[in-house]
Image 1 (cartoon, one colour):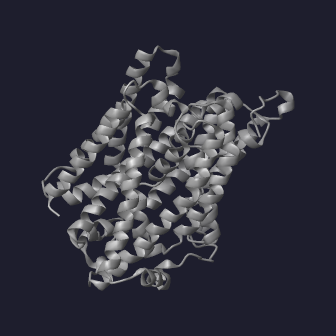
Image 2 (tube, one colour):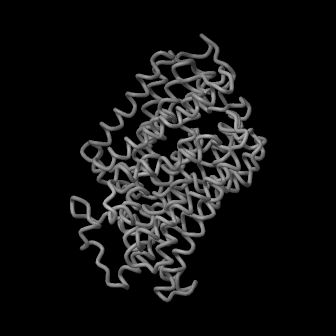
Length: 500
């Protein structure tokens, strides 16, 4: 594909987003920016959440990762289902009962001021890192597809990419994002379906043959029974469950959409319809992964021998497989579909994340609600710009230091940064004890550090055991034990009735 064609596609795509933003941000207020005036239809929220919950990492890294990990990721996805049940039956009722804008204000009401600030701080760190990793992926693809040939530096690609997100979200916030994410989710789903169709056509596979080909492939193995294996099914399942609880239920980004529904009942309906759809979409991505490697084999493409697809340690960089094949070996139409798909899914998650970062910082640290509307707007827009700059810096640093699959990088990062949130909410909801609030931040910092120590020596200390995504569980446990150690029984100092 020529750079001019790709640039034209990108320009046209963003023109559509800008038009949607202009139409939906008229008479925008802080209430519409933060929670879309709490009147969003549940079915619109459910559909928009698909794009937000996935990302460019899902679009590229999940298919690429079947090369080394087969369909073991499906165990994580099945764990999502259990996680969404917990969110819908425990967390959503709590948030709606308290009428929260930022979900971290719950921590102040239940545990205290420093617990609240600590929870909000760890969300900001978690979401900024996670979103930057996702944006790094699409910037890399655009660099490969367009800007390398034009001799444009990667730094410029990153700045321009985030500037576009800022332009269509800084006024309308969540009210705009519900519409843009609905459009982008539709584009993403169309693109993954079309990608599967184009590859199947190239391989001359009908629907039945497609199913048989995927099922018979060694890369479609789901169940791994070795306990010490980082692909062990039940370990992956439990990790998926808790990843969902923290990265959706304890995450301002995803919960902000749920809190925009008209009532608790509609928010729960949104979540429970969304759940089977997200499982089905992930199965499509795993199917696409098997087909990519079947396609390469059929065309005589030796991926592990191509210098541009190798990491510094000379192993295959599976995150580059889909972009490489789409840009260099797919038909022009299929290549166009790939570019639109990666842009749609990445920006659907990134725009929402930027808005959530702005919301949390404004509500949790600036106390924006105490100001007149005009000053709220100025503070909100400056904060939005500031977080855009933070994302740019993180992406550029990640380009220098990363040496692992992005799907692994995202979940491992989440394991360290969301662990304190898991510990805080578990303590708050399932106990009635009171904390020595001033000690909460040191405990929440110590948890990830202890986790890092154990994970770094797990094979030596635990008989060869390798940690996968369950880093999150270990981290949450350390934080929970630390919180228990600095707490006292409720009888000595009764807690508010905010625990389950």
